[in-house]
Amino acid sequence: MKKKISFIVPVYNVEKYLSKCLQSLICQDLPYDMYEIIVINDGSTDNSLTIAQDMARIYPNITIFSQQNGGLSVARNSGLNIAKGEYVWFVDADDYIRENCLSRLIDTADSYCLDMLDFYMLRVDEDGKTISEIYNKPEFPFDQVVDGNRFMTDFTFYGGVCHFLFRNEFLKKHNLRFMPGIYHEDEEFTPRALVFAQRVMVKQEACYFYLKRTGSILDKKDEKHLEKKLRDLMTVLQRLKQTALDEEQSGNHCTKGLNKRINMLSIGLFNRIFSELPSKSFINEVTSTLLQSGLYPVSTDKGKFSHRIYASLINHHLGITFLLFVYKFLEIWK
Image 1 (cartoon, rainbow, N blue to C red):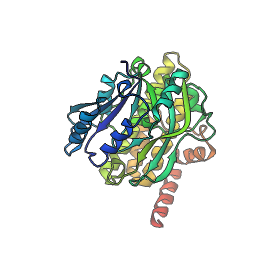
Image 2 (cartoon, helix red, strand yellow):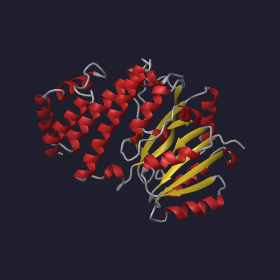
Image 3 (cartoon, helix red, strand yellow):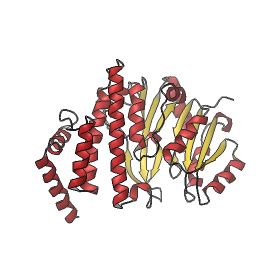
């Protein structure tokens, strides 16, 4: 039987969380033979593989593929290479999804012939308590079809891929894959997907639960790790800028939304530098690199008023000095 959806679950040393994740994918309102759960064991050294194998013996729609550790992007790409479903849903192994939500999402995607379907994500703690909601701003026209350019131009959105359903043929047609070896891979992938997406919808329903856990990648605070993440975000910006230029040269002038996203990510990069790694020499390196890539100075005519003011400050030496002082002052009084 043809599969309606492929869950792609990269797994690396998540023995504490994997059972709950896979169980949430099993507890759905579709027969097992209509969907597949692809577990990519990315070189786990704990009991994650054993847990997945035990569940695969019980549930026939779980398939396990093991590979040497290559990181999240490589694992997701491996899953994409073998996914047989009409749709793809990326689920991180320490997260989980809402019980019996699958048929509603697929019905919506089928009914409107969507390339991408967005839905709410809830950030939760390890006890399942909601910390915050992650969703599009309320001005978004829920349950209406828009193209990806308008999605990025008119609305604020979270770039993570786990709260999107993607049509598999759409991903294949545009050869959409994750960039290996970087953090912020979603921020590189999602805007590129939206450049090509003709039919996008947001469903006002929380279907994905993102676990905020201690000891995760995002919680690491050492300087080398922080610098790596910031450099990777610069790489993402450079890749998105090149995508915008390529599309404009090929005659696709609907890149206003992508350029807006690039601008927002640029502002976000500086904000993270000031708050996480407030080094004047590193800031000088960043501005020099972005200048060479056509990403600096940051545009001051995009986004809300506060973003335009912030952009004006980071575009000037005195403004950067002022912001460094402000962030250091706030850090002292935390």
